[in-house]
Amino acid sequence: MRTHVTNFDLRLRRRSLLGYTFGTAAYALIIVVLYPAFKSSTSLNDLVKSSSTAAALFGITGSITSPAGWLNANLYGNFLPLIMLLITIGYGASSLAGQDEEGTLSLAATLPMSRRRILGEKVVALVVQAFVLAVANMACMFVGRGFQLTIPFAHLLGATVGVALLGVDFGLAAMALGSWTGSRGAALGVASSLAAASYLVSSLAPVIHWMHPARFASLFYWSVGDAQLSRGLNVGSLGVLVAVGACSFALALWAFNRLDLH
Image 1 (cartoon, rainbow, N blue to C red):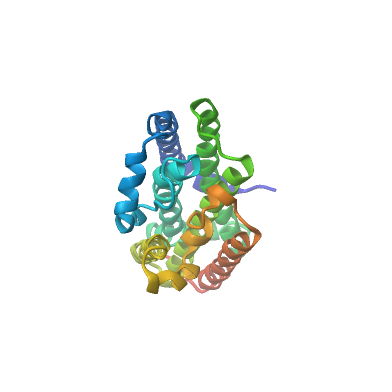
Image 2 (spheres, one colour):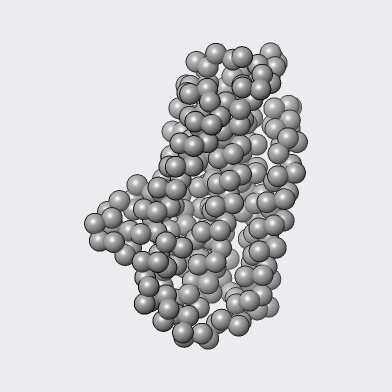
């Protein structure tokens, strides 16, 4: 099966994807290499405990000197999801609304394929970008075995899938918003705001009592905010992330079918 739209979009995004992937992987390797210097630091744990709310803002929970706590505090709880969302929301906003504003989406629509097929190929491009970034960072974690940083493979795989699906879900939301509004800027702004709110709810819910029930409404909680590096990604969390993605795809398809192309 030929995937003209997928290949075209991936070619357009290859430089940014490679740049983000190599840059994030380099940062991940630094985090791994630095771990032995902080492994026995009781003062670092005391600092986190003394300022739990500030620590929560950065996604830090539990012992920061444990392997899972170290990676969560420095990579999986904040930095990696941020880079992931920069890639996926950016692509989601530009893949439909952005290309429509540029006048190139109408050219794709002249191909002998349905709008469902066009959207499906763009979703494939979105998924490829998300998993390339996530898997590249997971590969860097295997170096940690030589630096006393050991995470069970199943837990690491679960966290990797979780952060990738987080990106896919928000990327699909940006696609849906772009198709609905016809504006790349609106899709980018609204999707980014939703992601920021989701992060804050997941981060602050453990330390602010009245926010605790709201954590279930946060995609960050289901993907990286429920100790996935310590316990793995459970079936319930995976189901929520997949279900949200499916709903976002359905909304994007509904809106795309009604979008007047320029």
